[in-house]
Image (cartoon, rainbow over all chains, first blue to last red; front, side, top):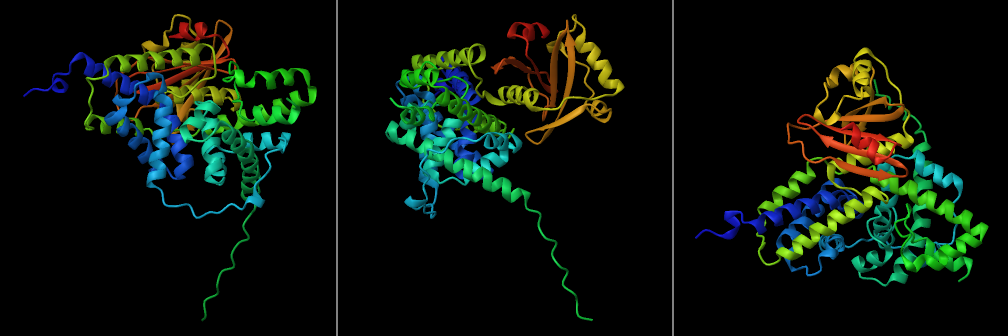
Length: 194
Length: 239
């Protein structure tokens, strides 16, 4: 029996067209979000693909069409949480910055000097519960209310994590730049016994 | 609300004014207007955030990812017929969001053309321009000619241009040529990226950011982006 999908009926074409629009609109931002979570390109690509695969199979359940963007970011985050191993890094509460440090001019210049990949690397050094809202914030696609919805946390928590996360990020950027300025001492050649 | 409370709230204010209409920030923004110290703090905070945003956006998604997503979705068991109106609504929402971001607000990513347009804008803002060579001069003259419609095709010999000293940058691991030209006294910058294989032309993509406008499009062999500080209309006229 011929199915409607095989006949390529009008609604099917609409579906394909909208899917492509969604991919074009969000795949790069989703990839960057995935890269900041997974911290490697292969896993980030897998997560992005998996997110759109879930959309292709379950997107029709979404009743409110205006929520497609939040749905995609939420799905990617859930897929990440589902697939990852437990992060063993422990951040002691005493180590947490207060989120009250002001930005110095040199910190702005530092970011401008660094390559995009290095900034993402610094972001990757921030603990995950701060990194996730921070990345969504810097991708600029989601407001803080939408970030709260995506991550399933209260808006106050998002604000607090953004505030502290930025301090973490500035510290990570400073550390990264310091590290990149260290010139390694040439290793001494081990002399072979005659 | 005091200054500390305003700071706490404004740390969640996205750079580029995307939250300008968000009522949750209204009180804090009003305080910024009245308090010079807070205004200075906010300026620095926004500058830092804008710099981080620009850097993160410069990280391009792998070129083959989009094709892999679309190919993967084709084999997914989709149920398309139950939600036609919802899909239309999503399409409308995306088109609206696209129009909004193009003409009124900060840019957002929209696939490889959008990425490339964003790359061009970022380079115009931060790059050091220059280049020379006979092949470059010939193409520059053609680009400057008001009768040349860029989207109708350009005689690009990528290797020759590169070898003759045309400024070369890297986008997503690929070489990109940049050519400056003037049209009617207005300066533009044209970026040329070879496509992985021959492909369809598609619809040009517009992007506006920080007073700059870019348009990106494909022909069968190259992806182009032209960027300048002129308005969207002036950029459109080039095509």
